[in-house]
Length: 148
Image (tube, rainbow, N blue to C red):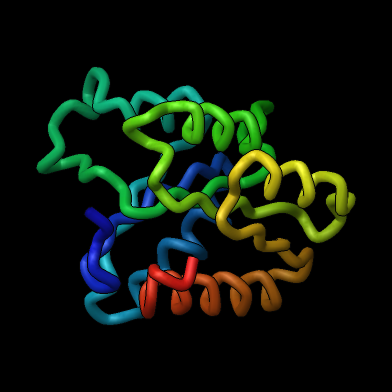
């Protein structure tokens, strides 16, 4: 069952603390949108998604309604995480947003879409533009998850 547009839970896979904070703040600025958990690398994200180890407490670590991942996360690939999620029968229904650098070649975007990404968002280099893009993304995800 899909989460209602309000009170969702987002899993953000991002090792850049500044970008993680910007996106977390974008979600917090939207009343009743939901909550955000942050995984700092792909291994942590996989453990979170499987409810393994410290993540077994689903009261504390809610199952995500949407996953957002950077294209590169601490040397790993967000596309590899996406493929892993889409190959798992319990996880494949979770909408997945891949955040790629503005400088990424279009083949990276094509690869992400072919692997099953619901949305690919390009991250601008300029911090003001990045904040604006993250604000718009959070608003879109919070307002109507069915549009993903």
